[in-house]
Length: 131
Image 1 (cartoon, one colour):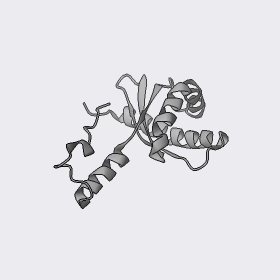
Image 2: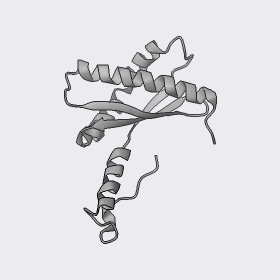
Image 3: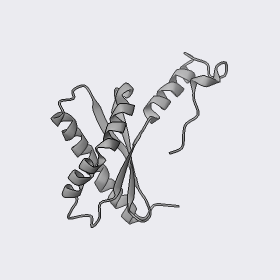
Image 4: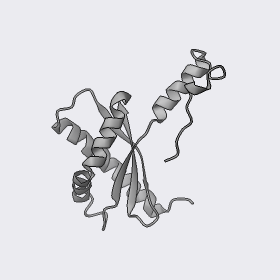
């Protein structure tokens, strides 16, 4: 089912505000050498849940950071609600996911360049999980 214009608008507002807020929270925590970007936000049809896909560099820290974000999501939701109070009546619940598409693309590039042959070892490119 295609997203409605309202869903797209809410997703874009959330994506921009989340990116800015997460970067500022990272600076406040004193974390250096970590880059967080919000790669995609999708909002459910009833506008109650938003899935937030986070890309983290370096990717070794991604799982820990996504777990931490899911732990502190009431705080993040409150801070975003304060920013979007003039645009949204009700703030959707946030669910954070790790966006591993850059790692997946890197593995494909290695396979194409011939560094590792996925035909000889099919475990090199694991199956992607639907979220």
